[in-house]
Amino acid sequence: MRSLRTKTILWALLPIALVLAIAAVTTLYAYERVMRDVVQEWETELAGTLAARLSEGMNQHSLVLQTIAQENDVRSMEPDRVRQAMQHDESRLTTFDAGVIVYDSHGAPVWSTIAGTEYFDTGFPMLDTIKLLRNSRRPVFSDVFKEITSGKDVVLIAVAVTQDDGSFAGVMVGMSEVKHPVPGAIYARVVNLQVGESGFAYLVDGNGRVIYHPFSSFMGARLTATEPVSRVLKGDTGAILTEDLSGARVISGFAPVAGTNWGLIIEEQWLSVIGPVRGYNSLLIVLLVTAGVLSVVLVGLSTGRILKPIRDLTNGARRIAGGDFDHTITAQTGDEVQVLAEQFNNMAGALKESYTDLERKVEERTRGERRRADQLRTINEVGRRISSILSLDELISYVVTSLHDTFKYYRVIFLLPEPESGELVFKASNIEPTLVPEQNTTRIKITDGITGWVFRNGEPLMINDVSKEPRY
Image 1 (tube, rainbow, N blue to C red):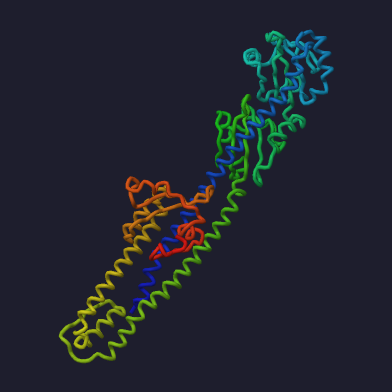
Image 2 (cartoon, rainbow, N blue to C red; image 1 turned 135 degrees about the vertical axis):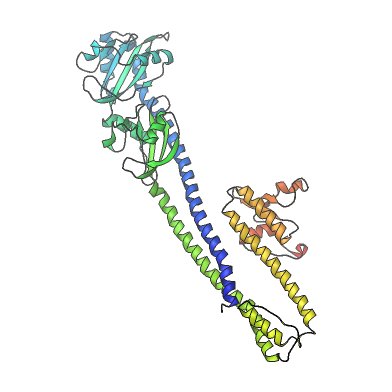
């Protein structure tokens, strides 16, 4: 025969175990989801910051060409004078290792540092660039293309040559090899920083070809098949959780570089970001298991104390039972209640005088147990709703209403801490805001009063007369 104590423990622990399991799963999922959103936001901001810094750095890099382009010898567009100017400024043009060329306003070459006649047999390779410079006079940065004499991958910076009256006189072009260490160092000073424990940044042109990468094997590679590159080429700024070329899970932020067709991408191993968080998840599971074990112990002790009077009463009934009485109690429960009923049948005659008083006490206890059951049911319902309500405001309102309706409190106020001000701020109440409008602006210093004391100490406090309370 299964004892009432065993039944009580089982029925008390099943809801607790269910709530703990739901809380664990929900907390672990929500924590990792929030972590991902925070990291994506940070990666987006970082990519945008680096792209802006790179744009500024590239404009500074183009100032060398702009300064030389405004020299009188260059603006003359006379080959001998241009040559003399370039020889004089040769040391300033070392970063343009693939060559420097000067074109007139029609795109015809005037002078070049590149040996051979190829550049003098053909015009400017990108006529659209001349049109753009003629209209905007702003530096133009090209995508990666093959230089016609060496066949190497290069990028060029083109600046306008203008006369004193502002008229367009021609174009000065500086070209740099993609894999050359000098321009690579310029990009690295701006882009190459440590992103987390395993992150890095790289640069692609408008066709998805790598202009700069901390791993030289990727230089010049076309990465348009990867989602971050395809997104940044569309002009998007953001961050996504994706896979790198090796199949590893990574968080990748991206942003276009202003003034160019280029895009900046930063990449970090997702495992290095989420690893520490998952360590805390293990700690949370241990805490929940510990809480479950403590619940078993506490429920066992409490049910033992609750059922002890019933066992004592049963033993006493056996000792005083006697006689044959008309009234019969029938209880086929299969537990201690059935034994108690059988003993009451034996001593019914002796207890007739106290029956009325006993019935009143039983009714009072039933009402008390029903009230406690309603309260426990409300607590369990709040715990269940915590895992299903995603809105904090909705959850707070639900908790306030449940406490007021179930425990019959006259007034329930819910406050949350505001770290910046060091105050507890009003969030919800069971009283309509229009009836007590001043409650909507309630702010309590965490160092003041009864409410501040409860928040600081994390302990409940019941006060029968607040006028006699020194903390009031």
